[in-house]
Length: 173
Image (cartoon, rainbow, N blue to C red; front, side, top):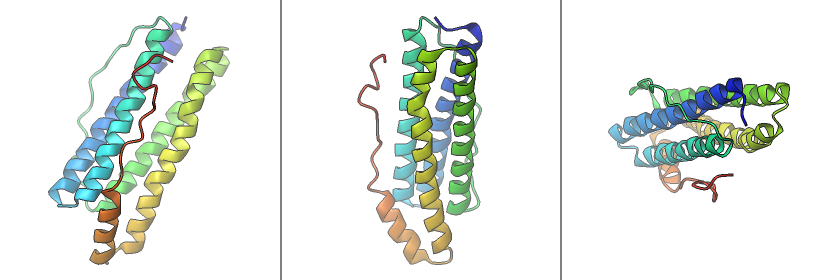
């Protein structure tokens, strides 16, 4: 059984994951408006993964006899000054999510909630990959600054991304 404090923190994280999906869908819309379909595809795949992360939290809360509590989702921005600015915002957001996951892990350790600490291990590792993935695109965009040819080549590359969804996504853990 989850403590009230842990349940509240897990529900907050679930809502952060839902906001993450909302943010990446907004970024996809921004890139669609620029006719950068590959960038938009990359963001849509990212959004789908975030929905998957939210579902993992949802299932875990119920597996531990908790109750999911959804809160209002803030409206994300819809404009960025450039593709670089959009990916800088995505990178900062992933660092924020990583920090939040780390704080949950600390709370689980403080409460000696070993099942939750074990559950969070997947997210700790996933966030390393999430940050690296966004940073890789950001670095390429910074390198390409001023070169439309490289941006269009990158757009083509990003169009091949498909969401990486966990196989146990819809099942309880």
